[in-house]
Length: 124
Image (tube, rainbow, N blue to C red; front, side):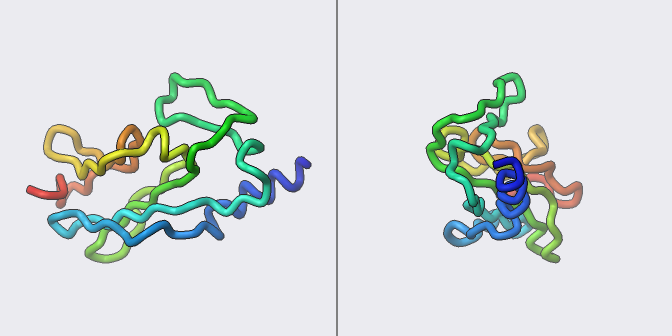
């Protein structure tokens, strides 16, 4: 099982399936894409992690909906950040594009990446 698990971890993002259409921030700076990981093994054989690092990771957990995010600079297509695979049903939520106080783009409890210095916030 060890080799199969390693292969699954390697493929999970490389062969991931996009979920829905990308979200573009109101000011046009950011593009946020959501993906379902490609897993060879059933979800219960993947380490379940919570975006809050104080919550202990779990093996053999029940996943609601595994997913991860990629944040791009929409103006030039450059990848800004990519998250770990989280249970987006549990930790996901509304998109926050950041502002001058909270310079982080996030979805629910999932921190995706820092705002670009020349494009703070998504809707001002």
